[in-house]
Length: 594
Ligand SMILES: Cc1cc2nc3c(=O)[nH]c(=O)nc-3n(C[C@H](O)[C@H](O)[C@H](O)COP(=O)(O)OP(=O)(O)OC[C@H]3O[C@@H](n4cnc5c(N)ncnc54)[C@H](O)[C@@H]3O)c2cc1C
Image 1 (cartoon, rainbow, N blue to C red):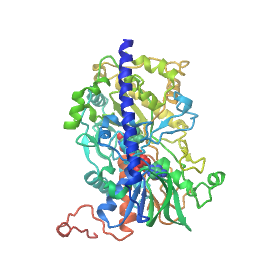
Image 2: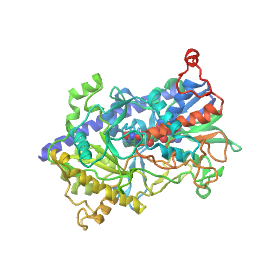
Image 3: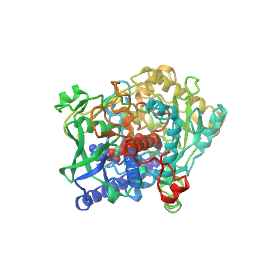
Image 4: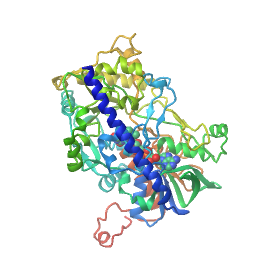
């Protein structure tokens, strides 16, 4: 048996090395072409920093609905068709396509990770984190978004924005490949009286809808004319101000510093970790922090505070005595590879997570917990990739995860939807290349731990259903290393377990919160404008004041679209029109104010 595991490890390791070499090739060929080909003008109407989910929605709408000049400035490289296969997502973690952020050592979480630091992958590539993500498309609960805008936009308006994005910007499919675990979990949910999930997220389960086009990953950046509108491998250092008006940005391109100017506005869409970093480097942030670092204060605002994330636990918690999916080794079967490249079908299209569910640990009508169901676990690849992605310590690996090698693993991952723990992102140097200190303070609020403990109990309930028993499911009975002194599956054991095995779902938000101008928690107003300065906007994950009820990519795209409508179209008196649905509009390709 040991020799099979060694062989599997060897095989996976070869795949990891091949993908690493290919990523180097993609990265460096773009770097060289950046030097000789990319053409940047000194001034545009708008500058967009970051080509991720949000930046690309804004760029696409600027290109297709206005005559404004603009440029998207992206620190990462262009992608490559071979990197679009959904199954390859985990290979990008820790690579040149990832900012490779880690948390500072955590007081209440991440004990099973090296130095108590959890890794927090974020995409550094054209398309941003949407090139690394699991492609799950969830609208979330619309009434939360109405609250974010303090009533400025109605639920119907938000719904229209989602419809617009779903019809014009994303490609959405049902998952193209499913394991036996999917149907078993849906069967279990039925046994436990959960409904099928409807659109306005309440409680219930469903198979995933994913952002894919013919089985290939689809990102908002895939709409862009890259040669015309994007410069890659260009790191934005800071915003340039004239008085209190943003007039441009300083960048490092091909090792050289230069400036680009914007007539109408600078839009920061660099994500929830990098946008606060750029603002702080530009003198917008907590006064005390900026003074300590020696940066002149342009505006004292709580930039970088209010960091939140959907936190979960439970990898390799559910085991099976028979296979519930094809094995990781099967993934390199040439038939599956060809099926993907020729038909856009089969296991290579897998987003990882096949089913999602929304539950309440408090018997309420709205969810406080999400389940993500994956037919793999941490030990599936025998330690060649995922162990490093999650930063697991060797001792924990040897004592716990490697013990699952002789079983089959699947994952029912409980995630807290509305955590109360809050952390921060602070720079600790004036060097734009230095990563900021990311302290999410995971699980620092006791109620978050309570929710997750109840979540693990719900996982056990699911595993005890007939549907899961029929496919040979059972709970891993090994004590988690570090928690041996607690009686297994008691509340105190689970409390210890989640503090050790703390997992991010890579959903950091909130670090440049949207809110009312007189609140001391707001960084941008409900028009996405940075408070107290002119012509500077933030539109990305960082403006979300709280976490949505579900995966966040669609909500970020929706926010970017609202930003475009309200702060570019309406502000510049360009009529709003979601579809040319009047005959005259259709005929003359215009929109009328309604
Ligand atoms: C591994 C993973 C799995 C996920 N799974 C899902 C999922 O299944 N469903 C879901 O809904 N959400 C998922 N998410 C979350 C979702 O993808 C992100 O929240 C979303 O893409 C963030 O969008 P954004 O525009 O705020 O930032 P990003 O998409 O991260 O874009 C920011 C861009 O700015 C660039 N940038 C940053 N700093 C600079 C600088 N100084 N100069 C120039 N450019 C810069 C970055 O390189 C990047 O391209 C996942 C995320 C990850 C990482």
